[in-house]
Each structure stands twice: as structure tokens, then as C-alpha cells.
Amino acid sequence: MPNVATISRGIYKPHLQIEGNCSLSGELKVSGAKNSALVLMIASLLTEEPLIINNVPNLTDIDGMVDILLAMGVKVKRNLDQINIKADNLHHVELPYELVHGLRASFFCIGPLLARLGKAKIPLPGGCRIGARPVIEHIRGLKALGAFVTVEHGLVSASLAGSNKRLKGAHIVFDCPSVGATETVLMAAALAEGTSTIENAAQEPEVQDLAKMLNQMGAKISGAGGPQIIIEGVKNLQGCNYKVIPDRIEAGTFLLAGAITHSKIKVAPVIPHHLSAVLQKLRDCGCTIQIEGEGIIIIPGEITGVDLTTQPFPGFPTDLQAPFMALLAIANGTSIVTEKIYENRMQHVAELQRMGASIRLQGNTAVIEGVPQLSAAPVVGGDLRSSAAMVLASLSAKGTSRVEGLNHLDRGYENLESKLNKVGANILRKGS
Image (cartoon, helix red, strand yellow):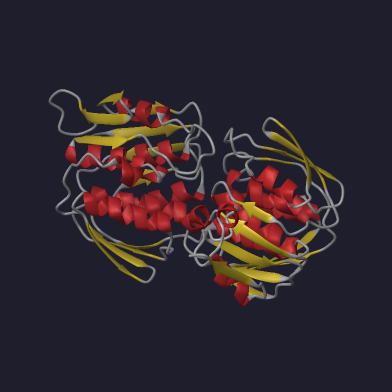
């Protein structure tokens, strides 16, 4: 029998055992975008007709969203990477906290529920513990559309004001270009009476994907992908058959896997302009990037340090800050990484230091002095993207690492170890 001390060190917790010093070759397949698929599933609440969504990744976050839809009386069927949804019997429920507390996107249901049923009650969201991420912009936007909104005891309640049967079009200016708020208001305004304008809208590809599907359903939305979005409200939306865009964050993680192991690999499918800022930083680091249709080939050279600051799209994505820092930990020279989106997104620094990285943390800025090689160690990913960073660091480190935090990793990466093993990695999942 193992002793208590052995168990307490986490040896028997679910973890990945990763052999370092590996070399990769071949093609890594990119799944559908998690953050897009989640909000497209929520958009199904806007219509009684069947909605078919293709290229949906098999992730625990997707499982969580299915459970939330089922709790509201929505019919959901899954077949491989396809989800069939029909919300013809949608009914209002106060979603239980245990269903929504770990999935921030669940809060976005408030927009479609309000537009379709005239009322909604949603607990304040959870998700990765990477910062406060308040929902004030969502609430301000819904109030502008004519909703009465209160927040009490961790519960957000919204209803149509007075005798109104529909939300009313409005001019909305966000203080910051919040992706979630843009998506929430976009869905609510699609069924509002009159025209709505969102200023300082988020420009992320996932917002564009939502607008594209809503238009296919009969919405009248223009400008998505720019700072101003115009929505002409319609009375009803129809069902449609839609394919989720490739996951740009997974694609970026795979490109970094090639860079950190000094391996030439191909990553596909991908929409290259969704990764423009990342590709430029990889070029600046010393990598050659070749774009072939929906595929990107990375040919790493000698990796040198670069500075980067996270910004809303089209800037460098916060979701790739931690994975990129793993690469910079072994780059020649000094790098400075500044996190401008979330105030608590440096949880990976201590774990990289455990592997021998030389990093000084000053608030939300990390100064990284590259070292020749990292050393294998037992590490823990504290959130989704820091878990990915631990995997990347372990691929290049000397020795065998153990990476915990798979509950986070499985939220956003579909069969990560299987995909990496197919191109030459040696990763075993243990304890689960």
C-alpha cells in the first residue's frame, strides 16, 4: 500500500508523464474552436428550429454546455464532432450554480433567454481563476436594450421593462472591447425591435463566427470583425447547418510545440490571418513560417528573445501568453512579457521556475532570461493555458516530467497527448 506522504505528493493524481528532449515531425490536426462552439450552441436558444453545428471539439467545456442546454428543456444530440440542437420547448429555469460555476460562457445565455422568453436568471460566472472578468459590460448593454437587470446574492436577474414584448434597439458603447459582452448583446439585439449599434465592439474571430451563423439564421448583422457592429432586429430566426472555425489558440499552441522542440511541423486546418500577431512573434524569434492554404508550416531556427504584450484581437492573444513564455524560457537573450488583459494570468511562472527557467515577475510583467534547457520536474497547470505551457515546457526539458492540472487542460484541448504522440512525442496519461 502506498503511504500517505506518497499520495499527498500527487503521484496518484491524474497527470501526464512526458518524455523531454523530443523531436516532432508531421502534421498536427486542429479541432474546432472551443470559444466559438460554446457561443454558437448558446445561439441555438434564439430559434425553435433545428440547428446543426459541425466541427465541435470533444471537450469537458462542451459537455458542460450540453448539460446546461438540457436543463432548459433543449433537445441535444451528439454524433462525433456534430451537435444537433432544437430549442422548441425552451423553458425558463434558474440554472443551478453547480452547472454554471465552472463555465464562464454559460452567462452568455442571458441574452438569448431575455430576447426569446423575456426573462432570465443566471448565476455569476466562473471558469479559470485568471482574474475578475466582471460582467458589467454585459449588464450595461442589456439595460440599454430595455431590460431591467438586478444583481443579488450572486444571481443576475433580467426581464423586459414594463409592458414591452421585445427588447428595443439601442446605441451601445463599451468601455472595453469585451468578447463576451459583444456576443451577449449581439444575440439579444438580433431579436430586438429596431436597429442596434455596438461601438468599441470586440473584433475576435469568434465574434465574427457568431455573426456569420446568426446571419445564416436570418439575422441582419453588419460590421462584425470591426469596432462597430450594426444589428437590424428581426422577429424570428431560423435553423441552419454551420461549421465552427478552426481553433486559433490550439493552432498557436501546436506551432509553439514545433518551435520549442526545434521541429519542422505542419499545423492544419487554420485560418492564417487569425494568427497574424502570433506568426509575427514567431518570425521575430527566428522561426520561418510558410503558409500553404489552410496549413502553416513552422521551421524553427535559433530561438532569440522577444518582447510581447497581450492585447485584444488583432493583437497578441492572452490565451497564448503562457505557452509563448515556455518558448521564451529557452530563448537566447532577454524577453519581456506584459499581460494587459487579465490581472491573474501569471500562474505558470512559478512552475516554469521549478523547471529551471529564469523569470522575474513584477506585477503583470515577466522578465525572462533565457536558459539553454529546462529540466524535467513535477508541475501543475493552474488554469487552461498554463497547463498547455507546462506540456510545451516538458516536451523540450531534459528528463521526464509529470504535469498535473488535466481538469483544466481537458477544457480546451481535444486529445492533446494523442495528437502530439502521432507526431513523435512520448506522453502517457496516468491516474485517470
